[in-house]
Length: 112
Ligand SMILES: [Zn+2]
Image 1 (spheres, rainbow, N blue to C red):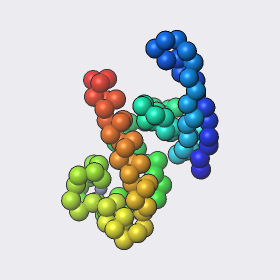
Image 2: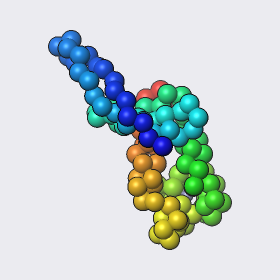
Image 3: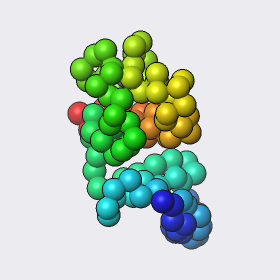
């Protein structure tokens, strides 16, 4: 489910600029937004290790990952990657997962 929304940001000169954003509902009351520059933010804080839980169709294939705590990014023998090859998970959704994961990870690294 997607929602279109607008956010206003002040630019460096103090002018308001409006950016159209797309909100992706990943759970009830939880949206992820695509915004230029700062690509995603979560309305509720999500930890990178919990991100996979928000991708409902991934759940079935996670037990097929060779490693517990598989991030589904670089691992070999990853159930998610296999499911993509078999066409059970859309490549687009996976790309989104990777993008959000990396952003969450960066945010966590800045925090600690
Ligand atoms: Zn995996």
